[in-house]
Structure formats: C-alpha cells, structure tokens
Amino acid sequence: MRKIISVTSFLSFLFGLGLSLFLSLTPAFATGSLPKVSWIPGPQVVKMGDDMAQLNMSGDYVFANAEDTYKLMEYMGNTPSKQDIGLVIPNKSQKDWMVILSYDPIGYVKDDESKSIDKDAILKNIKESTEEANKKRQAEGIPSLDIIGWQEEPHYDSKTHNLVWAIAGTSEGKKVINYNTRKLGRYGVTSINLVVDPEKFATAKPEVEKLIENYTYLAGKQYSEFIPGTDKVAEIGLTALIAGGVGAAAVKTGLFAKFLLFLAVVLKKVWFFLIVGSGAAIKRLFGGKETK
Image 1 (cartoon, rainbow, N blue to C red):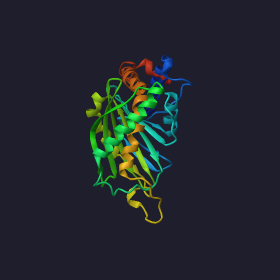
Image 2 (cartoon, rainbow, N blue to C red):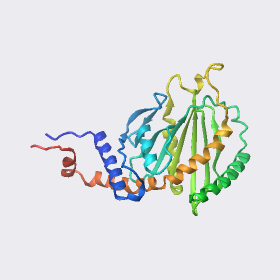
Image 3 (cartoon, rainbow, N blue to C red):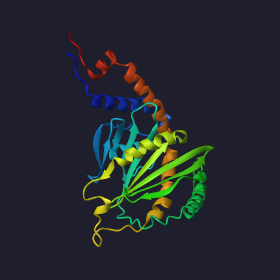
C-alpha cells in the first residue's frame, strides 16, 4: 500500500519550505530570526479577528493568520501592526500578488457621503500630503512617491458596503498602483490592500474582487446590524477613509517589494518541485513507504 499524504499537508510543507529556503539564502532580505509561517491552504473557511469575520477561500490560495502576518511584517522590515488580521497569496507560480487584510475597530462609519465624494478635492489633498511626506522619506533615505492620479476613482457600493479606489503613482521611476478596498462593518472597517506589479494589475484585479466577495462579517458584526444610540459611531466618514488610507497602502507597497520577489521566484521553484519532484523525493520528505 502507498502511504496517503494529504494535499493540505503537502502544500503547507512546500510553502514553508519555499519561504525558509529563500530567506535563508538571502541574508540581506531582513534581520532577526527566520519566522516559521504556517500557511493555511484552501479550500477552507478561515476565521479572522476573534470571530469577527471569515474568508471562504478556494483552493487557489493560501492564507497566513494574524500572528504569522505580524511575524512576516516584522521580519521584512515593515512596522508590524496588531490590526493586520491576515495575508493571502495565490498558490499558482505565475501569479505573484498578495492581499493584506487589516481591521480597525473605529466604530460604525456612516456612508452618508457616498453620493458626494469629491474625488478632485481628495486627490489634491493626497498629492499635497504625499509631497510633504516625501520630505521625511528623503531625510530617512526612503524613495519618494509621486502621485499621478486615480487608477480607479473612489466609489461605494451600498449593497456590499465596500468603498473602493486605486491610486497610480511612481517611485524610483517605476509605476506604483495602490488598490484599496474598505469593507464597512458594525464595529469597524476592514482594509483590504492589493500589492501587485502594475503590469499584472489588470489580470489580478478580477481575482481579488472575487476574493473580497468571499470575505464577510459574521452574524452580529455586519453593517446592517448597527443599533443607533447603542453602537459606537466613528468620528470619520468615507472621505477620510480614502484620504487617510492611501499613505498606509503606499508604505506597504514599497516595503513589500522583496516579498513580491519571494512570490515571483520562490513559488515558481516550489511548483516546479511539485511537478517534477514527485515519487521518491516526496516519499523521502514525508517518510512515506511503498510496498507491493
């Protein structure tokens, strides 16, 4: 009989192996001890934020929970945040993008500005704020970011309670796209940020939109369940979510350049190994034995 190895166990091992090999071979990638990441492969429903929301993830993706996301942020030189609740990447070698999910318990954000979002005023504010922030970036040796304009103008869906926008910019002569979704809930807002090579944005976007559709607040936490006079109301509205969210997304895009390199290089090697390194190699890895 052949020892059965579950696909879940195999993928978990491969992604852990790929990350470990890549990081151990590139000491300049980060500082500190190599984090152990327990990738959770789909298809699976993963809970996030203390049973605040869930992601119904297909077999096309793998997920890192809040704890592992925090470790990855820290290891790669980003400022880790307790608000990060998960990270999703495709498990196909030709798809090198990732989605970072964060949750801010700021309260119920009123959507009464949805019909009056002044995209021109917001863009002007974003440009001015970015120019001011560039002074600090330059002083700290961080590449500046120049805003080109809207890649996708801000728009709000009153049915899904999703606020979506994308900003186009340049950094070190290269185009940068920040694609952002804010999903409103009863007690706060989930930020869903896509990090991707601009050349692959058009193909990644529909897939990410589908992923976002499968992210839902659990019963009792949904936007429609807000109780006036009882629940906390946020001090900001939709306009402030957009103006305040661009800077954070830009920082993530810049600092995750090396992570994108990991996606582009390591996953290709991992899936090559998955296809080619079968048979005896797999049995050695998992201790499987085959008998006639």
